[in-house]
Image (cartoon, rainbow, N blue to C red; front, top):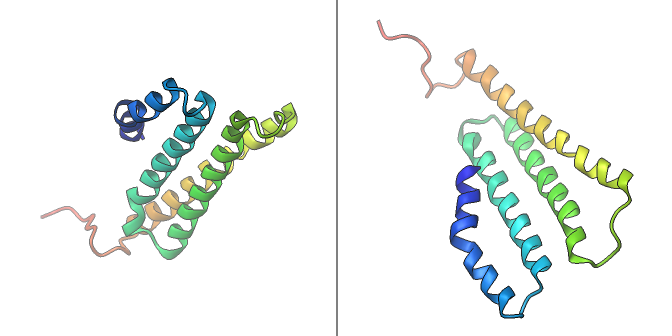
Length: 131
């Protein structure tokens, strides 16, 4: 997650800041796009962290967590585009609390993977000590 933030912070920001400073794109549009893209890269990094050794159920939980996380980022950050008035406080709290669903889905997929590896049902991960 830190690497994704560093990538966007140091590599891609000049390509977004220059058109903004030249007056081509309003600053709030570029900030919103950058924030959503940064969230997408971070979430995809989390998904691919254990994707290859997950069970089919764990893969489904990972992708559901990614979809929920990206939907929350889009819903929350799209307020900056000024296409509509800001959400009322109660709706903002509901959107923000949906991040707990994303965290829970990721945690459930990692728990399923941990249970699978701890009972040695994954043949490539040998957890027996060498004698």
